[in-house]
Length: 135
Image 1 (cartoon, one colour):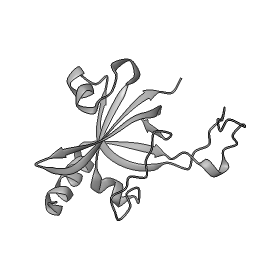
Image 2 (cartoon, rainbow, N blue to C red):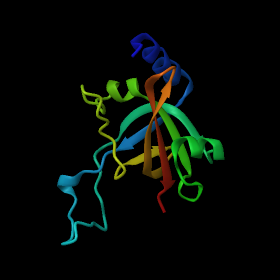
Image 3 (tube, one colour):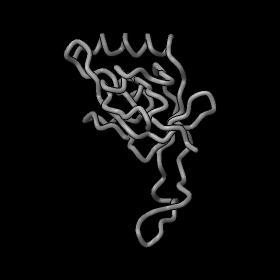
Image 4 (cartoon, one colour):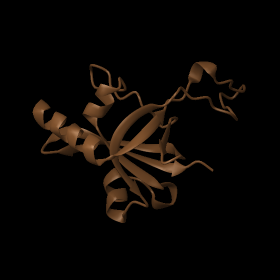
């Protein structure tokens, strides 16, 4: 992978993108019923990253991410380097964000329903995250 390109993309997004909060699901402090479900999930404090935010994403973008229009109110494209910067990417490139987590933009919270790595110039440099507004 071209690390210079990855850093340049991350810098461009920090300068031109939006700030989003990612809330990781806190499994250890959430009480589950006998079926492993919870009515009230608890989350860790937010980790802030920068990404390109698309409210009401286009059909083309939904197809690119593999998301359903009825279930997707937001798509955020976040550079891999941003996740590294805040400690949400392991040394072996495992993303620590999951579909049980939340993303917040402009005081609106979304359930993360889709996470897809995207490539540019044959390198995996970004993640596209699709979410549905929390009701």
